[in-house]
Image (cartoon, rainbow, N blue to C red; front, side):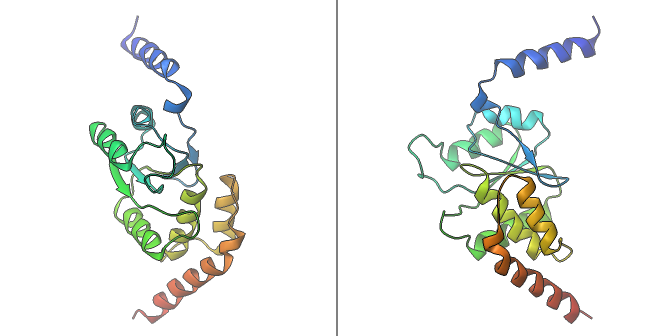
Length: 176
């Protein structure tokens, strides 16, 4: 038996023993960015085995009694050498501070990044707004498609997205 076959069997046995909550669905939304629903600390091994090196927690602590805290996820991320950022976004609105923080995280870290919240909706909507902020980011239709392809809608963010795209265009024009 070759080493490769042996390692493949071990990986298969490991992955088939994980509970569904420990194997969250990873929805790729761009080359280096994926989204998912609520993670458990045990899911970090699975996340790392899929090449994820940065994690962004968008869910505020305490939304549900069974929700792991951001601290518990951060500790698990540290054990698996995964970078961790906590950018809580409430249900009602996405704060500019969270958008700007995510844009900074993504600008500094070009590695494989996973954003998560309860269902993935807030995560992808936050990403859409951060993409609208990025100087070389996609246009409005591309951003809306990114959100739709992930299984969500962001038409209600259209005006906000357009404002951010216009701001980045104005900033690019004013540079010498």
